[in-house]
Length: 489
Ligand code: GLN
Image (cartoon, rainbow, N blue to C red; front, side, top):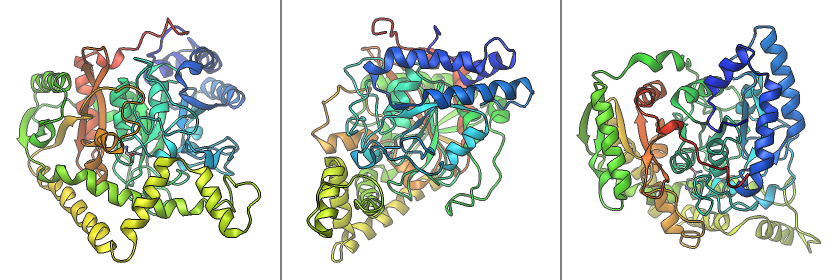
């Protein structure tokens, strides 16, 4: 298969017209994985046999005329979605060899829609990170420049889509982990409204922030994939029991008369010039399509990072208490007693970023510090959410950069957690407010590295931002660019 940038829409049309079979398509992607994964390390696990079996079933379904737009499409799952019988590591030594006895709801729904799951993608350990460098399974490389990070925590999924090692992939986003890797690898990724997509079977990091979503090449594909994973799930009590709109049907409504807010706080110090000018160009495209750009203010943007780094570690410290070396996961050798079993299993099973978060989390929740940190952070979270509520009284969507800069070099920020945390400065407040947000490509910097912009929608208005993104992608072709990997195959 020659093309790295095949979309779900194109592949699905070709399958329906019987120009290619799902088995042929799957074999082509497995071939690319064989040729390229060693260098890129996007996948932790490739499940060739199940993929080919699913592809055969997809071909039978297509022949019967019962295909969905996802039927026969080769995809990958972030290694945080439980997949029955298939190793699910969450990027951690703690879960090496763990084969869940059940599927996550997202996994189930994609299987039911007939998608072909090629394997599981690399990620920062327990989704903590912005570069995929905290994975126990080695770093993933950015297909645009192998010496650079693919973003994180869903860096494996982003690299896999960008390099054409799958047509689309799932990711999860607690503070930016779908949007930031999408931005730095030149793909389109969407974090849905909190509660739009079931978290059942998604290994928990920070439960009030975590949300799974699609990582694709285009807004059109994102709409298709979101359709198959969204919707109420009785197994997740925070899943919203509301109707799922027809995302694809709303894509072509145009953006005439829409108001897009541009927050001054997101275009100040720290933003690289190339990113700023790419977004300035994008604003012109929106204006030409009939949208009105309005300057707005999100005054609490500056407290998003400290607020997040209290709330997320607090929740993580509680969620990660289950890894005790007893029930499942890593267990140390020859423990002296129960205490030793707990402490050594955790000391040996978790990496240093995860330990940092657990310590931070238990600290901010401990008596005496709870009011000073955790309770204050919850109040700040409300103020951040109120910023958006107020903004959405006068605009339909908000436009910001996704990241302050393009992909940085591997190792550059690894030993400087605060610098790493700042990668998510524009994405984190969206999770704190529970809103839908997406990143889409809008240009390249001087080093030929992709630049992403972020669209933030009103609660449950994924359709609104997808429509803005689709309108932009009809006018531009950044989303169809693919890295040249001929030299490494
Ligand atoms: N980079 C952020 C963190 O390290 C966000 C991660 C995420 O969204 N999972 O926590």
